[in-house]
Amino acid sequence: MSRTAMFEGLVFDEKSRLLEVGWVGADACYLYDDDGFLRHLDAAEVDRHILRFFKDQVLENKETAIRGMLELMGKDDIFTKTALEYQIAHMDENVDQMLPPQAREMLRSLGFMIIIDAQGNLIDIQMPDLPDIEGLLGRNDY
Image (tube, rainbow, N blue to C red; front, side, top):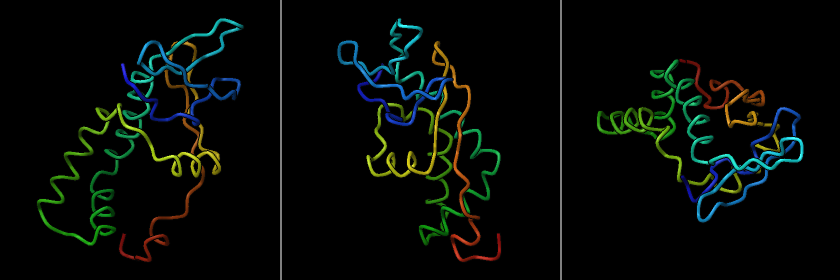
């Protein structure tokens, strides 16, 4: 269980209804309205499913992602690369953290939506179309 819901304001049900966040004791839950029955879905478990999805996406393009992050950081040493690889390998373990409110609002305003079912299973992640990273970084060698 977790004291925070990492993706608060971004999690929706299959009918595109925003799931509120509530607590059972000190543990955060996404509140899923199942035909009038309010299900309390463990936020840590739901967030873990979402982070695994992102981890899988990053791992599919691991070398490109790491190279892009190193470029953005202005670093190109083995220690930074190793630290990034470690962070990627363990990113689904960071469930008790919070996205900054500004990041959540930006994602929501762009149409980012995480869709889950009544059991807390990840159904879909709707991501906005983002500009090509080459243009974003001003680089032509990716």
